[in-house]
Image 1 (spheres, each protein chain N blue to C red):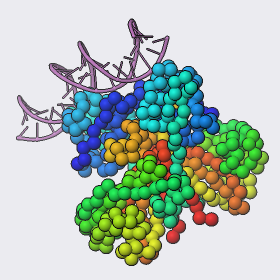
Image 2: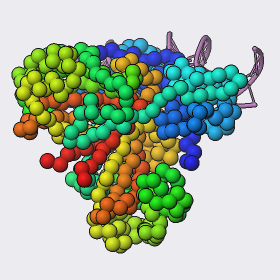
Image 3: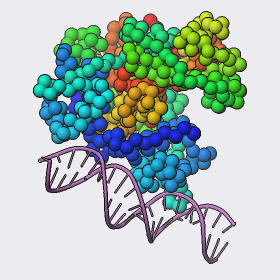
Image 4: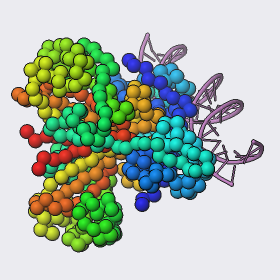
Length: 246
Length: 246
DNA sequence: AAGGATTTGTTCGTATGTATC
DNA sequence: GGATACATACGAACAAATCCT
């Protein structure tokens, strides 16, 4: 086993480095068949730190729901499945998680009519300062928050879009009210960063958690841009699956 | 502009959070045409912290080579741009960064012949325990490390692959020596996590940095799996670009 | 059933790092 | 630079729950 050390004086607390490492090792399949973790003493020795420091890390992971500690018995991995979120020409949130989750839903956190920033204007191919609708949404699967999205629509074309979305809970259905029967994902740019305070709250993450950020552009049947969105996924709960057409 | 705050009691020191944010903002194109940064006072106010804290963050970035501070004049951006790495059916490292970097190269850090783990065996459609070649590589663009990859090949079919790779520095060329004229990317799974110490070293990152992880499977012209790989990209320097065929 | 060993939980104290003013 | 407050990390001991012989 490769022995990776924790770094002192790095600006990242030891307990957080250890928590990140353990979380990562769990994704890689650490733990015996019962999901039992090594003892606190063993972990402390392995990382070269005091037992208290390991305990702080474990407490953070218990808080996240990754581990479960039982006095006198040990610490166990709390089984969590990672959702595979497909990204492709026909990317749709509702279908994406079909078959993986029993219950899934999206709801709107808020909306606003604003003026297009240069970035948004360029993506939607409208003028800078033109009216756009900004939609803030949260998606859940099996009662666990999965993603947090901010979407922009051309307000000239889609004024009142938010009301249809609230009624149906579906972007696809809301589009139909505006005569858009079909749409495609033209491009997606994927990056990653630490979760901001907004994500920490809505995605129920702990400070230091990582979010995958997908910048996407949807186009209608005529190839015109209709939606520009930034979606943040909890990196612990989701992986993005890019599949190629055969 | 959305104002994301720095978090106290997160196990990540404020100065490091601020350093991460600044580095990220620079990738996104912060700074005026001369590369001048806002003053320390302005940054302190923006992040809601003391000026000393901002100074600590700036010193860390100067140490990394991201910023350059000149007494009496100000702080300036040293270099830095974010590469867009395309992912699609014809994903190839060498072509991926064409046009974005003047100089790019891959080199091998090491190789080993091993027995296939269940994960690798399943991906390559061979038996568990069958011999596989593991290749550890590092890719650079304009003298900056971009990605770190671990690839597995069926050793029955590709024994000696590493010698051809060393000679040519190209996966595509090495394939040709084994009669594989063309290959496709069948699937890519993207996730993100904190960089491990191996990545910190090879990708020249600081503790707490984030890496994008792409698990990919390549197939030959007959649809048979030929390469299973895990590639880690520095999230600060690369974004993954998923483009759809028209 | 008893008791020792193991493992997590808690409480002291002390030193150092981080951040503010 | 110095004073102050809080977070982080270590050390030692003990308590509580569980396991095993």
